[in-house]
Amino acid sequence: MAHNHSHSAPAGNRKRLAAAFAVTALFMVAEAVGGWISGSLALLADAGHMLTDAAALLMALLAVHFAQRKPNARHTFGLLRLTTLAAFVNAIALLVITALIVWEALRRFYQPQPVTGGLMLGIAIGGLLANMLSFWLLHHGSEEKNLNVRAAALHVMGDLLGSVGAIVAALIILYTGWTPIDPILSLLVSLLVLRSAWALLRESLHELLEGAPEVINAEKLTRDLTLNIPEVRNVHHVHVWQVGEKPVVTLHVHVIPPYDHDALLQRIHHYLHQKYKIEHATVQMEYQPCATPDCELGFSDSSEPAHHHHHGEHAHPH
Image (cartoon, rainbow, N blue to C red; front, side, top):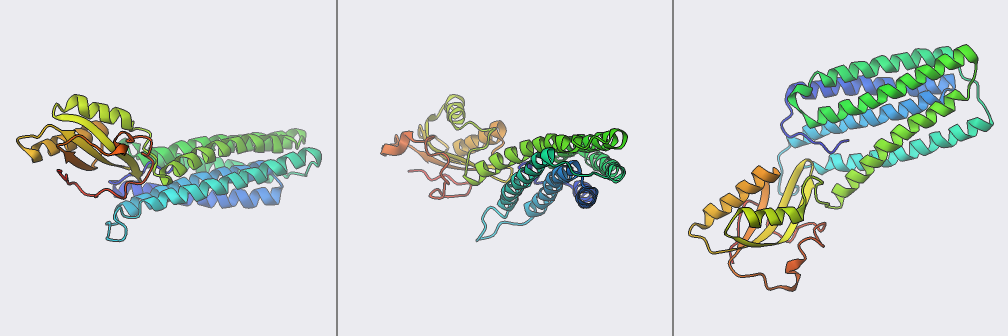
């Protein structure tokens, strides 16, 4: 949800994200208050779903903001991980909200509560219009292929379904007076929220635990380097992790001593950048085979933060 951080988002994207966030947050509050007053659990569940959208949009905005902050001596990667931490906290909060809504829905099957259908319908229609406006604002900017904006647009699209569900429930209550449709639909909306929250929890936790980005297979990377650069005999001590959207790698390469050390290093960097979109690689070139016992442990400990390695675009020949 919020792991697609853009590092070159133009001002237009920021304005669209800010406008969509304002619309979503406003109607989230309206739905929560309306749900409370009308007694509609479906509206409260949809407000919870809108919270996932508002949080996604806020984290997209934060990512744009923090991506522009320059790294310093204390935070050498800048503050991009803050968005990951926010995603993690958001996911936990969503799981708690979903659990409360499910508990209340089950309680209402045994003790039906009165629901004001008219008020529920009015607010649900307002929520649907708000979602459509947010979706238009975000979709309008998708030609820039901004990952953040596209991810947020997908969330709003999912929320449109929640609003439609609340409208259907309100109409059924108005015309038939059958109130159990309200907790039934709130359970369906809760499933949507649960799906978003679980995916968000898994992704953010993976990144916080220094997991390798899903798009990069460390074993394949080592094979590719050995096959495509003739001077490379062996690749070991590979560590791949992610900061924001930025993949970072440190690795040792055993090479045939080249005529031009810097040219070979440049080719390795160029290959990593072209094939794997890795801009920040620390490559340690070695002319002797690796003799330490953990040479083959390139993957079993790849989740460990590579703090012992020297960061920077340098090679350290032995």
